[in-house]
Image (cartoon, rainbow, N blue to C red; front, side, top):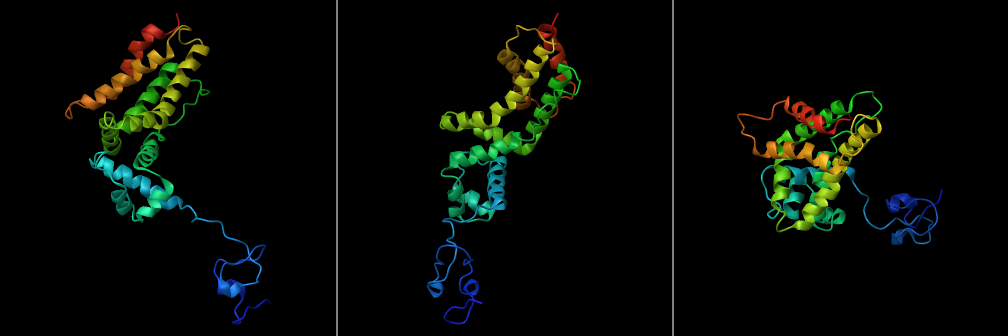
Length: 232
């Protein structure tokens, strides 16, 4: 058994010392073989999730983007400020990563299940409403949109990371409907997408609390639009 000067094994002299090539940084292990440790600290998924949840929690409580600070986030997440900055160089990148989590709950459509295009669109809109109806998602969306004038790059990144991937799911449904012969071949996919999603967003943001958006709204919206975009 290899021992060093004080009678300890190399791994006892330095916790990071392991067998292999290279030298252990502990002076007590001078001359002993060891593997160099990679610079930096290992990433912690738990810490990252705690930080992202902290951002969503603060924005969801009404803290504006302008008032949000990295110090607040670190305190809420129970980590040091340096831990936050090691993972995100600025507040914008941190907020974009956090809000993108909200829309990952919108599942991709199954285009091989034999259902009609209309039914798939209704399911997509139902999922969209469910996400926006949660207090946190609604307040976070409002907070980010309110920052559009002073922080246009934030909103641009928000659209790229959080909005566009979700819209692409609806585009896939519409294109599949055209290919299946259920929708007109000449429909404008982008215009149709906006005609479907905009009424949901507008109604959700302006509805009266006593008269919430009813479950029949998505079906009525799709049925009305299908009269114009359905194949003849």
